Image (cartoon, rainbow, N blue to C red; front, side, top):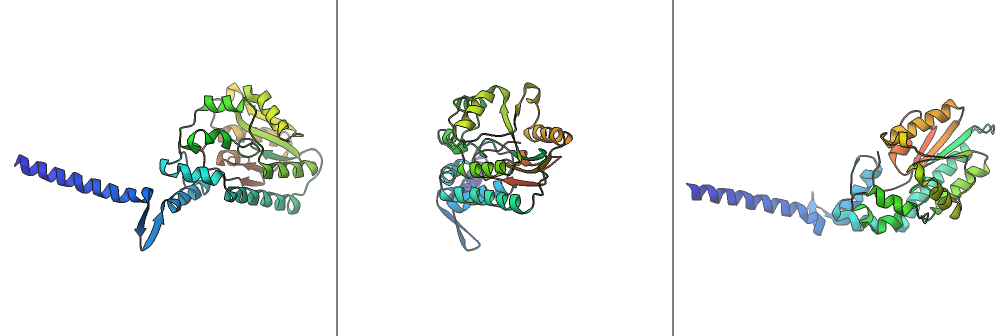
Length: 257
């Protein structure tokens, strides 16, 4: 009886392992679903798209099987085209739908990291999001003020500035990085913003979305008309009060809520 039970258990485990192995084939090569071959690239592209659609949330790391794909995407022409298209839509909105009063209260909010400045050089050394985010390590990198500009965002920044709109930078960076942040922005061509808001010690326990919404509430209470927000995280553009329009740049490297 004991031998029979052991055989049944072994058989069950064997079937389970076989099923798991069959399912795992998508990560190694291909599998067929409803007659359609699904490759690893298809799988990872679906994962990335669902991050952008906000169906996938609060992920701590990029899935191991998609690290290489995400790295290639962030260095690709497609990433540039996706980002530039978002900026083009900002330009269209700016030129057709913003009834500016030019009284010093027209405002546009920008996030900083992966909106104005790229963190890709940092994540290149950390598996393109395949490692759990280490805030201390990232801040050390930020303090060196070496992040490159995202050229498409710089072009938009300058266009908005030329329109006389007040540019307000609202970042989840902490206050002790102010000098490094200013140096970095100026060194790569960003200048002429109206204010730079960073997280103070009293903001530490707030979620990023709540913190940024509170900043907007103060701006609106101060009489600003927030025409738009450009960011790479949903936490930068969601929450009340909101802008008249929000625009999101692609970023599958990390999720901040």
